[in-house]
Length: 476
Ligand SMILES: C[S@@+](CC[C@H](N)C(=O)[O-])C[C@H]1O[C@@H](n2cnc3c(N)ncnc32)[C@H](O)[C@@H]1O
Ligand code: SF4
Image (tube, rainbow, N blue to C red):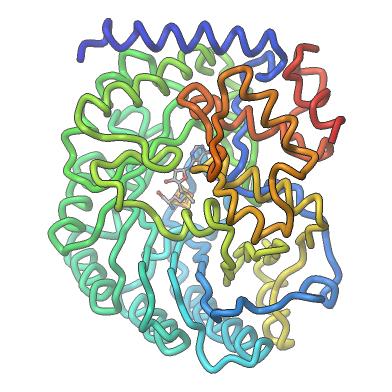
């Protein structure tokens, strides 16, 4: 497909984008508001008393849990990253951290009277969880596999950066991961344009990124690669060149993230300051919308379809079960490590972002959380709409299990009906889901189900149209 052909449907999306700005759905400065990954977003969770956090929590009946483990270490700081991390070689700090993780998991096991965690799905992320020596990586995996019963584990994921998968150490790490049952790797390439990649301050070259993907595929991992669009320095033309190269990379999954400038994690990324200092480099939101539509059309011409939001694959079976269980099935997931979060059926628990506090709470035999949210009945009903609607679809039967109420009997059902009249949502006896148009604007749409205080952008940024989120959420 030529660029001029791609621009035909891309330009139509831009027209829709302006139409929805007029209706008040999309904020006027065109800023991107990521929504529906966590509700509310990480930066909005309040402090909560230690004893309050788990009060009334019941363990899942089948005893199965998904686990996330966070490693806050990286070789250097990427411009767009919103996570606190330690940079450079801190071998002894990493050893100390692995010791603390072991103790944290033990505290969790004691708290819930468990011998081992019955692991359904695991995700080890960061930071860069492979930014360890092969010896340290093996030590962690040995500890982790001793604490978990993996007989029924369906997927074991690692989120990695390419530079840790190349050369002799890289090959050794891949072998260790394989030996301990890891079966899926997500590799952050971020950009195929070397100038953009340099501006991002990525710790690898394009050649190294491609080598890492090859090594991963050759070692037999399901391989997911990730990219960012809407980044300073990109243009519609350069993005087209990137897309042409991306589809040539042999991988199982391709993920595309629109650049997030405001912090959605525990530390504001440098990108915000960069854009303030270089306003001329900020991409016009119309062009970011064009880039997004180009992804859909160009990848489809290579047999790649969006499977769950943002993830394009040839086979429907290639997805992160961790993301699917969290966002689409609302299952219990527990997080360990600095900033690790637990997304549980009726609450959200967030670990501290402060290294010293993390170590000191664990030394006192406490789980290292300091923020969170126990959902009341209405917050639960919102959450069980927002996550699945954004990422996949709402299964009515599951909705009733998770909330105790049929979706038709909630105060949110009239909003669903209203959105149907705009062609954003469709419904049958079993599911409520976004249409193609709804999928494209999914972040903006799910905000209509937020509690007003959690809408991430100010009221003054939206037109007073019929889809203004402040007007709609004030009704619920
Ligand atoms: C949790 S991050 C982990 C990144 C991983 N450590 C790496 O170096 O590639 C997961 C993905 O989120 C995306 N991401 C991170 N920060 C972003 C931002 N500010 N805007 C858009 N996407 C972002 C990137 O594509 C990244 O691969
Ligand atoms: S994007 Fe990845 S490698 Fe870069 S600083 Fe963030 S966590 Fe580290």
